[in-house]
Image 1 (tube, rainbow over the protein chains, first blue to last red):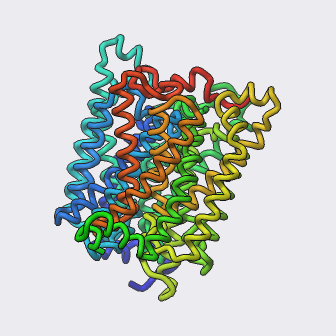
Image 2: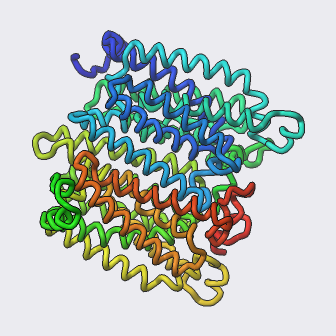
Image 3: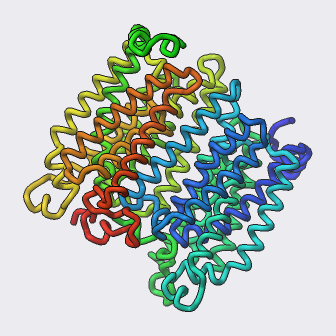
Length: 309
Length: 312
């Protein structure tokens, strides 16, 4: 490795000559497409806290799998999907939906569950002696750890998720925007919601393998939030969210390769920068473009009113 | 370390208390638990659990920034948590606004923490990977006498400060509009309280770690609210349950060396909540003042009722 030069083509070529970087880019692309799409719907459905919880639940899964000598991917997928099914089975449709704030009582319950899940993960890490260096990777991600098998598993999971999402798309969007009307029209709202939570679990599990359990938000929420600032149309917003997630992941992995700092930092920083740019763009457009007619306030889809306490 | 298992319980306990590191952990742990229980009750009551979550992310970034800069870890920890606590309070107290914006910003703060971690660990021999683990998951058994004394003094002062403002704070939390009309300085109380929450998160990070702060902050408080509707009784109960979780957790972690103390403390606190929730379900009546999460179809009932509405 010769380090970064001004010749970008040579840099990219050098980067691609490493097998682990190829794998990281393949996995990152799959995860980014998945997270961009599912994250957009998640923000639309105001289930960001559920996404966060599922990502956190993945950590004891991966740590426990390592302790038992299984692959971490198995732990991520198993725990995240199981967690999604549990959340879907909980009574009260709004218990784990709602914004990050939620109301005091239910967010206290979720916070307790998250702390317990993290504590279990820590226990597994402690029981598995000599694994403390891997802890940072599990929590904050790394670009070196993706194997060929993991890429294949991600590809299978990602393709399956996108297929289900395509089939589910219209009723899901309907149910997300207006659950009551959708139910009256015969959409199985509860089933659709449960299926979406499983998709969310798979996306969170996939993203955990790139950004680590604690930084999944950077791929799941931030691109979606940025897209929501730029357009109010669901179709366009979804594509934009995917595009932002993919660019952030590629850039983040590329910079992480040439810099001494970890991928988790670069991906969160780039995603946050994209969000700030989108926010600034929207504010500028609102200020100077307000004389023109048309829909200028795309915010309601993305900033849930339920969070304003 | 196996003395507790080998001997009869009384001798085992005496052996355990003979260890200086256990005494330090008990001293600091008791004070921190007391503070966390008291503060946690108000955090849950005011619907500011998310602020606590945000502050725990900040605690991680702050502690590692201090380590990366070669300063005392606690300096960065408290500067970050108290500073951001006040900032959150000034930005609008409980109605911190758009959750997606806040979630996005704090995911980035955690990313910054990772940056400081890599700066710190790559800086060479001055630190090892355990510092990171200690900040994330706590290291109550490794507190020395000085650190334990400092932690208990800070915790005791913060608890005293909270009890001093407890009455107006309770009033302002339950009905901010009426409290403001009666001359309670609601705008001052919000930032002050969040500064105390910041200090508490910093304290609790030393005991159970930044990631597990919730276990001490939210679980005992939520359990207490399930058991009694009376605010003062619930406040005391929350503190008592937190202290109980820490004591039992420390004994358990000492008796079974494979279990880290943070795990036992958080697990016991979560178990307290599970038992309290089960008890309140069996009793038929939700013990909470508003009953918002008794499994009813209206999860945001207390939002709608205006009980937790923003101060106008």
